[in-house]
Image 1: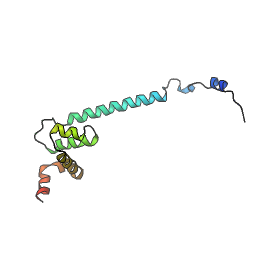
Image 2: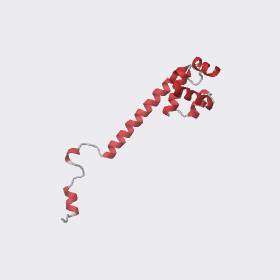
Image 3: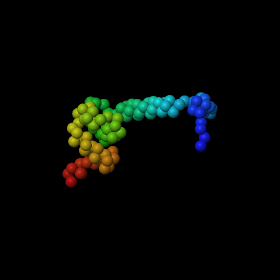
Length: 119
């Protein structure tokens, strides 16, 4: 078994390997990656908010309903905030989510659901 002098070993090993001299530390890499992920998340939220219908929407077509359901599903807005913004009951929003899950945007059309209601 070889005995190594600690101070000599620390002087021999540089803080960084010679090939990594210009490369940032792992913590710096993590912070840069985290900052970029947050930036992308904010861009995605702005994109979703840009396609969401206005808060005073009175005529709900399938595409507007789908935009709200997708935004809630993706976590861009919360269910409570969506209900408050658009004066929806939680049951109505839940029915939109079920219809969207079952049949996509087509399931949100009034004529498509009319046959379901009349049964």
